[in-house]
Image 1 (cartoon, rainbow over the protein chains, first blue to last red):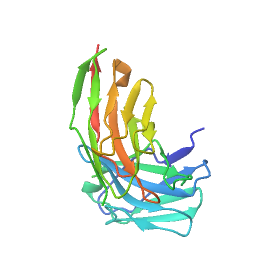
Image 2 (image 1 turned 45 degrees about the vertical axis):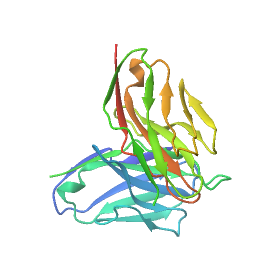
Image 3 (image 1 turned 90 degrees about the vertical axis):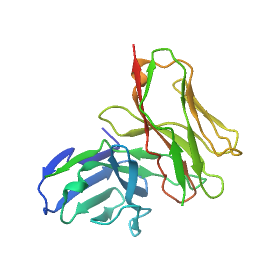
Image 4 (image 1 turned 135 degrees about the vertical axis):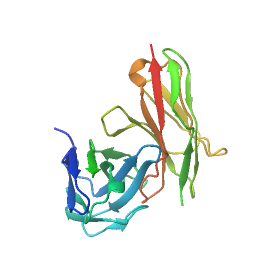
Length: 115
Length: 111
């Protein structure tokens, strides 16, 4: 079984709808992240959480919100979806390690299309 | 804030050709450095990493050396295969800070 899972894997929705993307992990990591990937723009950080009580905005948080329901679960919401939120969304986790920095483990992604 | 610049793609090579993908970064202090790879239809996975100056990370025939003096972490492979076709991302990571990813470099290897 995958260590980082994302649901749904694909979603098509209409402008103005509320959408929730879910991420679960079995790695036991405290740190979780949401990124979006757009062609030519690479990965951009939306929100991140270093523990259950910690939520931080990333580079492009406008139009998004998150909820850290438990150590293993981190959800991303689009309150009112718009077409330029069409993208590939990735969840990732990490453990701080001895240096406070370590690799991030990615889920398979959710492809979201807003029409 | 931290930033990273990768050479723009796409890069198209014939099988067994030599590969270099350039990466330079701007970061406070001495970050750890990572290369990630994204195969078609998949998420990112770690390819290699280096945690201090002059360290060389290596995996699957790929190598990259942490060059503090030039703030670079160029990815190299001596002989690419069709199966190496993917998007490659460079990322510096500082203590208690999320990784900052480059825009990615798409590599296509043709037989």
